[in-house]
Length: 336
Ligand code: NAD
Ligand code: TDX
Image 1 (cartoon, rainbow, N blue to C red):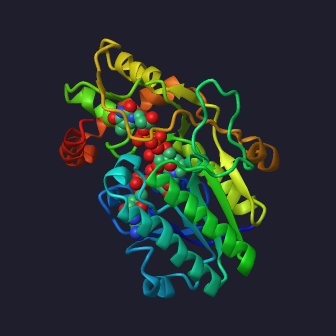
Image 2: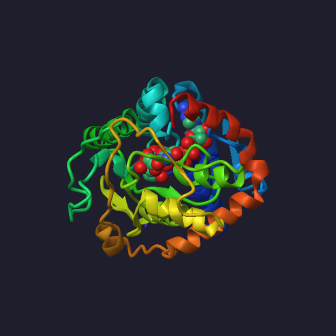
């Protein structure tokens, strides 16, 4: 078992990274967290506001900044790398920041890890495996070949490859996790579930891409956080672990669950232009993580998790309102 005391969490002001920061503060009182975050449009210091100042420090900066990493990394015992450009639709409209942050950023962190000998955990996505046919009984495993479809997923796949190569060549102490679609509080309103919830709150009709048959494998972000902690502290060096909670649902079903939970007609939505190259289905087999590390998800009732998430967006309009109009204007310009 690895017992970290002083960790860097990159992207700790984003949706999933900030959940991990809360998870560590709540469950591991002997760990100090340095959040390294550029505060892009997706980063919000409010996500970690109110945490004890002697436990969490925010450093505003770019993971591509090698000089900053030289200052920051020494003295830490691990880096958990969440920072990324994370939205597929943005990557289709303008891929460049994805190359920079996701590929070059990972390269810079690996170089710092090599120089200062710290433990590194790389947070990645199931999208690196491409998609499955709707009627294919298979699920992704750690052995599934990489086959990314979008600019976003290709940059995440590239970053995973850098981690594997640096680990083999330089003997770094690393692990990789590839997780399925997360949901929960603090998710940016550009993403599917928060976009539709906030549209309904605003009296706007939700927007469904294509036929709505695409399947995503949903996991509550708190279950992602507990899995990353288990892998960071007890995972085998050089290994990849898939994280998923058996949460497959197609988009139209999720959308109708949201509409019904919010007291609307389940057909009260708009069909809009499909995402180019839209992946059909993701599905995770997380047997390795469960068997080796004994991890189990806690939020296994998706309908209940969705109701709580809806409640959170109803109660926290101040948090999401500032991003809503600009996000919808971008979608509108793309016919979505
Ligand atoms: P997000 O977009 O909500 O947050 C990203 C964070 O990274 C923001 O705080 C942003 O300010 C920061 N950031 C961006 N560029 C940076 C840079 N150059 N330097 C420093 N900080 C920078 O993303 P998220 O949904 O929380 O995803 C976090 C990670 O989890 C990503 O690596 C993503 O690929 C991965 N992941 C996400 C999902 C999902 O369902 N959202 C699933 C599996 C894996
Ligand atoms: O308005 C919408 N209507 C719609 O039908 C939006 C925003 C999305 N969709 C569809 C597209 C997808 O099939 O809903 C599904 C989910 O879309 P996103 O929330 O954009 O997520 P996805 O593209 O599946 O990627 C997510 O999971 C894997 C995260 O954004 C990635 O960061 C993660 O790697």
